[in-house]
Length: 119
Image (cartoon, rainbow, N blue to C red; front, side, top):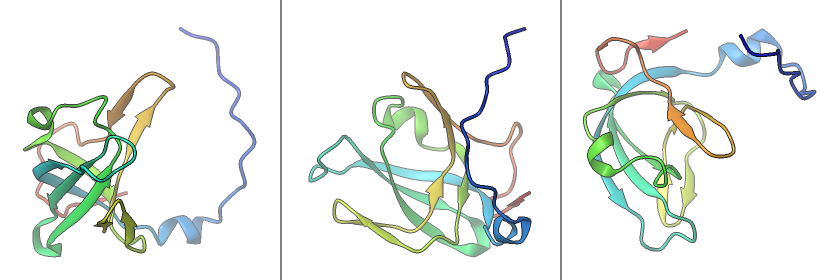
């Protein structure tokens, strides 16, 4: 077992603020390069079932190939304001755990229907 790591001081967020975020399971349909991006980025289309297909931009190109990502389920936040990134409007944000040298997308441990709520 490793030693506990002391977390850096971060502001506390009221539960009501956190509860406003809409976390959902999605399935990656397509992954494309964004050639105009300054950093290596992918553009994703992600199926969220009855909530529709959303577009997302993500800087995870150094950690995953396109082939590794298509068909994968991910956890994403859907109700952030859309943000233009390198000419792509990102409509959601996939969640990942990361260190200085590695990254892993968060996903359900078994197949769940697209659009399933995450709590």
